[in-house]
Amino acid sequence: ADLALGAQIFNGNCAACHQGGRNAVIAEKTLDKAALEQYLDGGFNVQAIIYQVENGKGAMPAWSDRLSEEEIQAVAEYVYKQASEAAW
Ligand code: HEM
Image 1 (cartoon, rainbow, N blue to C red):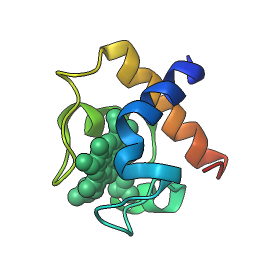
Image 2 (image 1 turned 180 degrees about the horizontal axis):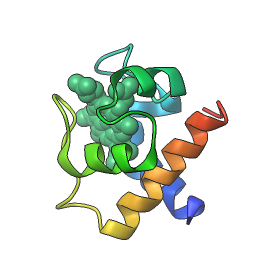
Image 3 (image 1 turned 30 degrees about the vertical axis):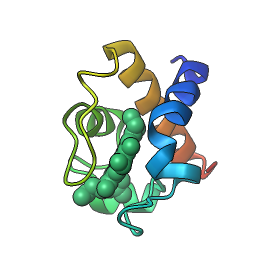
Protein backbone atom coordinates (compact mmCIF):
# COMPACT_ATOMS: atom_id res chain seq x y z
CA ALA A 1 0.00 0.00 0.00
CA ASP A 2 1.36 3.40 -0.94
CA LEU A 3 0.22 5.33 2.12
CA ALA A 4 2.28 8.40 1.24
CA LEU A 5 0.45 8.61 -2.09
CA GLY A 6 -2.83 8.00 -0.24
CA ALA A 7 -2.17 10.87 2.16
CA GLN A 8 -1.27 13.16 -0.73
CA ILE A 9 -4.45 12.27 -2.65
CA PHE A 10 -6.54 12.72 0.49
CA ASN A 11 -5.13 16.15 1.25
CA GLY A 12 -5.54 17.30 -2.34
CA ASN A 13 -9.02 15.94 -3.07
CA CYS A 14 -10.88 14.82 0.06
CA ALA A 15 -9.83 17.16 2.83
CA ALA A 16 -12.06 19.93 1.45
CA CYS A 17 -14.98 18.00 2.95
CA HIS A 18 -13.16 15.52 5.22
CA GLN A 19 -10.54 17.63 7.01
CA GLY A 20 -9.25 15.71 10.02
CA GLY A 21 -11.49 12.73 9.15
CA ARG A 22 -14.62 14.81 9.71
CA ASN A 23 -17.51 15.48 7.32
CA ALA A 24 -18.25 19.13 6.53
CA VAL A 25 -21.52 18.31 4.72
CA ILE A 26 -23.18 15.65 6.93
CA ALA A 27 -21.54 15.97 10.32
CA GLU A 28 -22.25 12.46 11.64
CA LYS A 29 -20.85 10.73 8.54
CA THR A 30 -17.23 11.04 9.60
CA LEU A 31 -14.33 8.82 8.54
CA ASP A 32 -14.07 7.30 12.02
CA LYS A 33 -14.35 3.53 12.26
CA ALA A 34 -17.69 3.59 14.11
CA ALA A 35 -19.27 5.90 11.51
CA LEU A 36 -17.95 3.80 8.62
CA GLU A 37 -19.37 0.66 10.26
CA GLN A 38 -22.71 2.41 10.56
CA TYR A 39 -23.04 4.36 7.30
CA LEU A 40 -20.68 3.04 4.64
CA ASP A 41 -22.45 0.68 2.19
CA GLY A 42 -20.67 -2.68 2.41
CA GLY A 43 -19.25 -2.10 5.90
CA PHE A 44 -15.83 -1.16 7.21
CA ASN A 45 -13.37 -2.47 4.64
CA VAL A 46 -11.10 -1.15 1.88
CA GLN A 47 -13.30 -2.48 -0.93
CA ALA A 48 -16.34 -0.56 0.36
CA ILE A 49 -14.31 2.66 0.58
CA ILE A 50 -13.08 2.14 -2.99
CA TYR A 51 -16.67 1.63 -4.16
CA GLN A 52 -17.86 4.88 -2.59
CA VAL A 53 -14.89 6.87 -3.91
CA GLU A 54 -15.42 5.52 -7.44
CA ASN A 55 -19.19 6.02 -7.49
CA GLY A 56 -19.89 8.78 -4.98
CA LYS A 57 -22.96 8.81 -2.76
CA GLY A 58 -25.49 11.57 -2.13
CA ALA A 59 -23.63 14.89 -2.01
CA MET A 60 -20.22 13.20 -2.34
CA PRO A 61 -18.93 13.30 -5.91
CA ALA A 62 -17.59 10.28 -7.82
CA TRP A 63 -13.85 10.19 -8.46
CA SER A 64 -13.44 7.51 -11.12
CA ASP A 65 -13.01 10.14 -13.86
CA ARG A 66 -10.57 12.24 -11.84
CA LEU A 67 -8.34 9.76 -10.02
CA SER A 68 -6.55 6.68 -11.36
CA GLU A 69 -7.23 3.19 -10.00
CA GLU A 70 -3.87 3.32 -8.25
CA GLU A 71 -4.73 6.65 -6.61
CA ILE A 72 -8.17 5.42 -5.50
CA GLN A 73 -6.66 2.24 -4.05
CA ALA A 74 -4.05 4.30 -2.21
CA VAL A 75 -6.50 6.82 -0.75
CA ALA A 76 -8.88 4.04 0.33
CA GLU A 77 -6.09 2.20 2.14
CA TYR A 78 -5.04 5.47 3.77
CA VAL A 79 -8.60 6.18 5.01
CA TYR A 80 -8.95 2.58 6.25
CA LYS A 81 -5.66 2.76 8.16
CA GLN A 82 -6.42 6.16 9.70
CA ALA A 83 -9.83 4.88 10.85
CA SER A 84 -8.46 1.54 12.11
CA GLU A 85 -5.86 3.27 14.24
CA ALA A 86 -8.11 6.18 15.31
CA ALA A 87 -5.36 8.34 13.83
CA TRP A 88 -7.39 11.27 12.47
C1 HEM B 1 -18.89 10.17 2.87
C2 HEM B 1 -14.33 9.21 1.50
C3 HEM B 1 -14.26 13.37 -1.02
C4 HEM B 1 -18.60 14.52 0.77
C5 HEM B 1 -17.65 9.56 2.73
C6 HEM B 1 -17.29 8.27 3.26
C7 HEM B 1 -16.04 7.98 2.85
C8 HEM B 1 -15.58 9.11 2.08
C9 HEM B 1 -15.22 6.73 3.16
C10 HEM B 1 -18.22 7.41 4.14
C11 HEM B 1 -18.31 8.07 5.53
C12 HEM B 1 -19.48 7.63 6.34
O1 HEM B 1 -20.47 7.17 5.75
O2 HEM B 1 -19.42 7.77 7.61
C13 HEM B 1 -13.93 10.25 0.66
C14 HEM B 1 -12.68 10.28 -0.05
C15 HEM B 1 -12.68 11.41 -0.81
C16 HEM B 1 -13.92 12.13 -0.51
C17 HEM B 1 -11.58 9.22 0.08
C18 HEM B 1 -11.67 11.89 -1.82
C19 HEM B 1 -11.31 11.05 -2.85
C20 HEM B 1 -15.39 14.09 -0.67
C21 HEM B 1 -15.66 15.46 -1.05
C22 HEM B 1 -16.89 15.78 -0.54
C23 HEM B 1 -17.39 14.60 0.15
C24 HEM B 1 -14.71 16.37 -1.81
C25 HEM B 1 -17.66 17.08 -0.63
C26 HEM B 1 -17.81 17.72 -1.82
C27 HEM B 1 -19.09 13.40 1.42
C28 HEM B 1 -20.46 13.27 1.91
C29 HEM B 1 -20.55 11.98 2.47
C30 HEM B 1 -19.23 11.38 2.36
C31 HEM B 1 -21.57 14.30 1.78
C32 HEM B 1 -21.79 11.32 3.04
C33 HEM B 1 -22.47 10.57 1.89
C34 HEM B 1 -23.81 9.98 2.30
O3 HEM B 1 -23.80 8.94 2.95
O4 HEM B 1 -24.84 10.59 2.00
N1 HEM B 1 -16.57 10.06 2.03
N2 HEM B 1 -14.65 11.38 0.36
N3 HEM B 1 -16.45 13.60 0.06
N4 HEM B 1 -18.39 12.25 1.70
FE1 HEM B 1 -16.54 11.81 1.03
